Amino acid sequence: VIRILITGFEPYGNFERNPSAEVALALGKNTFSNCELDSLILPVSFRRTFEILRGHLEKSERPDVIISTGLMPFASSIQLERVAINMKDYDGIPDNEGATPQDEYIIPGGPTGYFSTLPIRRIADALSKVGISAVISNTAGTHLCNFVMYNVLHYVGQQGWKTRAGFVHLPFLPEHVQKLMHRPQNTPSLPFDVMVKAAEVIARTAADVISREV
Ligand code: PCA
Image (cartoon, rainbow, N blue to C red):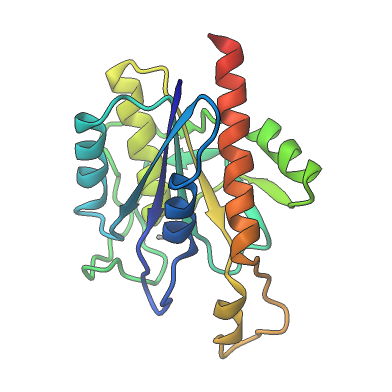
């Protein structure tokens, strides 16, 4: 059995909903043949988010895949993140505890960056086959999403685990765009059902690649 953990973030900033939390919960309720799915909602807090995730990893069975997700306002489609960098630089929206780090290393002395170990090219191809557009993105930003991705890949490496991990950014939901005061006309969004479908394809593709390795 392949264990898949999917994480999402709580709402933050002015956004009342964060599709990532809802997608993670929806996927966690799914049943896939020979996979065990688990979901975890993370706080948008530099202080707490990785503590909670690490606590979860310590007390549950080691996952084979960790797919973390978050909202990327104004993203044009689903973004499969290729790299996480060792940097905290809040992007104008403080975290939910008011933290506004600038130019700070996530782990002083840690590697400059980590590449995603999810099969992102295969995932992009699998998504396109079912009519969902996704791009490989070369920056996960320097906010909480990059922070979680960096910490997870660092932790997995330190533990010597084979676990594959990476990050997926989701665009706005249609209702986010309806509430925008500025330039709503050209802001992309994706319906919730399509996001859940995409998460299924991402999880299945990762599971597929792993089951062929063992
Ligand atoms: N998106 C933010 C933080 C939480 C979220 O869902 C980010 O892209 O870093």
